[in-house]
Figure (tube, rainbow, N blue to C red):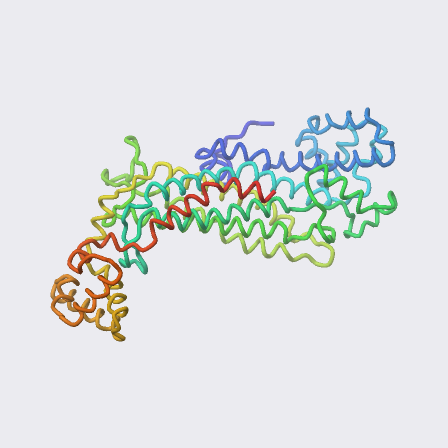
Length: 475
């Protein structure tokens, strides 16, 4: 075939994102390409044919051995050329296979199966293998970096933020623990759901009409074929495998996609000039702006979120592919082909997330500076809790009014509390009761008010450092 430049391809996945993810996309090609689709269909057809040899030809070793080499002898171009005649993809594959297999077995090629038996079973195998062999290993590397950041920064003070405002102090390790936990749980689910994809060899409407003519145990015949392919039968089937097995996997991948996008968004905001708490790697030859040489744009984090915006909405198509009239229509035949694009887009986002995390510079000094930039107002919650614990029922309102005075007069919260002898006495009493330092020292060390942040960061790091064990238990 004529060589075609990747820059003539229509999809950005085939030029821009391929060039940025060569190794990753080359791995995915073995599962998601059109060639892979044909090869996996051949695997199913050969498994079916071998079962016929076992059933009707006493399992002749010479025939079984000969069938082992058939898969490698079929090229996608042969199948496509045949399809020009048949106008039917699976019948084209069957015709090609009949010319390749031992003559005695030719009548049994595809016998008892319908096209979707082959297509849906091959689809489940492809999705399972792409997820297990490429996507999960990539996600595990992302998780590994999150765990590292979590552990290494468990005690690095950072101000917590809600609604874009300073809240109370945490640690950067605690902030990363959120993502290690969320992504870790999603990886475990993705692994479980990928392992539960199903196949079928149940005939035109899923009721085993055709195979019941060939064997008294058509369900056992199906189970034998699918077991050789590493699958279980769909609990019920029409012409298609129940769509929810694949749907649930894709939905969980979309959950993971959202987690990566959320992480990317947080890291992007932390790279704002006025925040400057983390920084992506910026190489000496890299350019941030075509006109402003000083720019160091957080473009990798933005890239992850942008991919999510492009691909996450496709979840609606996944839901719509649940619907098929009666035992089958063709309304999902085109839409399901784009699952490959979706998985490639997700894998690219995961790979870019890994790139960001591996090179992320954590500016601990700036984090400390930002905690103190609001003075001791980040301890307003602590003051309210201490005051209420001492028996003051209007503690929240009292401290709120003191913070308003602080903002108006430009004084510290500690000073405002000290000026109010009743409040100062109650706060000091509570501090003493729980073994904390005097008010003046307590309010000067905002970063020490961090609750269980350090403990939680380390616990999450310990838990998800062993995520491989979770995956092994899930098999």
